[in-house]
Image (tube, rainbow, N blue to C red; front, side, top):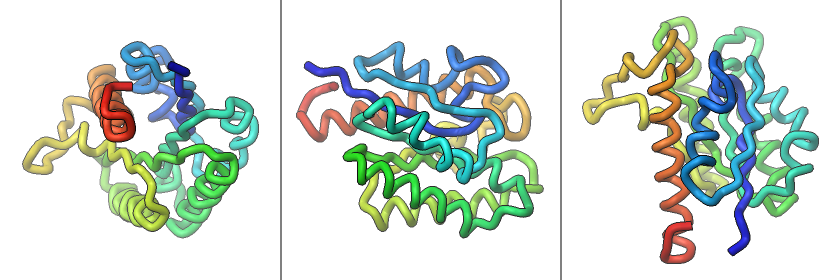
Length: 191
């Protein structure tokens, strides 16, 4: 069986900040399944910056899947509108589809401070609507950071934005289950 390649395009939440890519959710999945996971997370990136590096960080790997996780830094930047964030996400999606790469829209988890939480919720909602409009897979990392009552699991955060090691592990468990679900539905078996 040919090993599928997944590029994970993102910001610090993909990179594994403040630790290293070895502690990221991407590495967690890579170490537990036959997918070849490539961490293309850059700390501080906005969706526009991810779009600008599509060719060098995604296209050159010729992946089967592209996970796009962004929007948190956009939410903290008052000069970036929600519409701009969605515009650049849609451009990344279109590029991936032109390259016969299956895009996966990953929704960032909530932040714990009030400065950006409202804008981030709107970005998350619009990212989900865009994924639905294109009929794409959607990986919602909020599922790893909220309990069954919808309350945020603060113990998984290092600060108000970034996961601690247990938080990255929770993201990894969610992503692993997500990919197992994709491959079970496509082939009837794990990976």
